[in-house]
Amino acid sequence: MLTVLLPAVAGALLTWLFATQLAERGARRLQATALRSAKRQYDREAQSLIDGRAAQESGPMPPPDAWRAARVDLVNQLEEIAASHRGWTEPGTVQKLLEGQELADAIDDVRHDGPPETAAAARAMVRALLARVEKVAVAVERPRRERAAMRPEAGPGVVMRPAAGPGVAP
Image 1 (cartoon, rainbow, N blue to C red):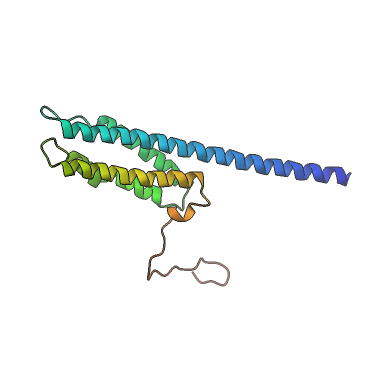
Image 2 (tube, helix red, strand yellow):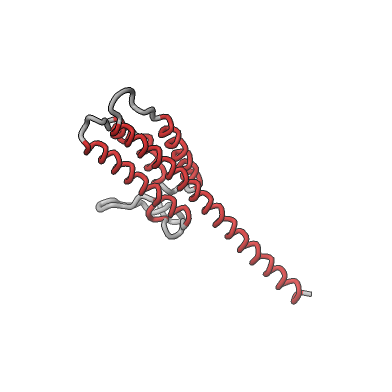
């Protein structure tokens, strides 16, 4: 009886293990896809707003409502990733940059009668930010390989405390 039961239990455990891994991989891919979708929408709205402000000759500036909505969606996606990967700091950092005043001011400074460098600088800030978002999306898909990129690294002169454990004083 043991020769029949043991292989059946081992097969069930292997099936469960592989099914769990497939489900986790699928969930990570969905999360990365949602983040990339929000990133593309943000990019479209930001570029549209910058182009509209740079080309505007008279009248009121284009409203930033769609850009703000895309920003909220992207921030929400980053919050979800930060919640599911507690040790990662990069999603929170990117989120703060998105919500920060520096990027908003760079886009607000774009005017049709202003220097063209202003629009170029705003576009460069958006591109740099979206490159960091893509880095987060890649890490979501491959959390074991990209884990170090999402956590703060110890710089020169930084002393890391050892983890508290048996025989180690906190």
